[in-house]
Length: 473
Image 1 (cartoon, rainbow, N blue to C red):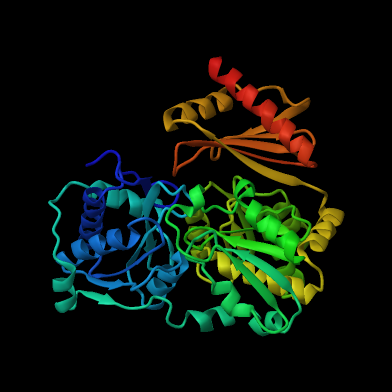
Image 2: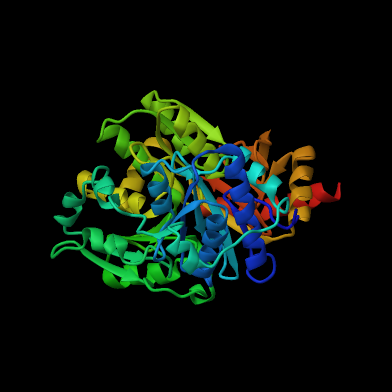
């Protein structure tokens, strides 16, 4: 087995031409074929890909290996959002789907996600089984043209029926009939002009930024977080838009800015949507977050008398719960949110459409709704900072913080330490800070939620000093 190939929180990702090579991609494809041979009599796989450098070629390489192993491959003829692959897998009851994407990672990366029959991210058990097959058997492959002629590779759009599915969840007509002015930033990802095509009308004005393919993503990561949303912020202010909404590289995450240019965080999005679904749509079910998500979800769940569940970072844990229990909404701090009635999967465009529906039906923009949230549940602000750290060092530092936590950070007493996923320190004023080594890139992620932006910055700054002290100890 090639030890460089490891599945993280959502798939295997690596730097192109270093570890993410055609040889390694073919090895993973062969391992997937061996896994299917061992686990399933159903030999069908859907394969999609995003706009990243060589993604279509990596997808074809996967198809060639799978076809050579007697598997029927449904290959997307064009780049598509990750949720389309999940949808196709669920709709046609396929055992597996593959997406060539590195999601929100910087342009130097590519990756491979696995989707399972239920239409969501593969479980830890499945990815570990696939890992165990890597390098066990020689890679078999066949030319794509030959595979097509033999009927083993079938090029077919993976989104057939997706429009009707979306219309069953979102009141598209209400948005089209509104007088909203919206700016959308697709960040050169596969979201393209999809949201604009959904809701733009003579009265609902939608301007789309960066809809086309750029494998370099303008030299940035296609991730809708604060430092990459300056283009969207400027356009919202210039256009006088009611809101700005963004999606990441493969279209499964959301982010945005309010009408005043301030950050519209995914934690605010999930809290506002939870309230909307509960109070306007009268829906019920558990509210589920990962360990880096907002305090608001628990407060909202408690107020509504609904269950609240906290999971480790990684959407696959939320997807697993959605298969077993009635979940109203679940999500990650990074912008991956799923809702009742959809797949156990994220879809950034779906969530952005729901946010627009929410504003139309509630008659308030996102900033006004946020002020209402503050009035009812207290004011909290969130930030995430990423620090370039090797996985080994980051893991060591996080373990040290769990073993030797400080007594206080930024003058606030540490009242509890949670080691569910990383080192999460709860402070006396209900603030919290989480230190966690990324499972997809060499980065130590630091998350913080506190009553003010200034307090967030202080806690992160002092928290990093405390992390260094714990590591020395």
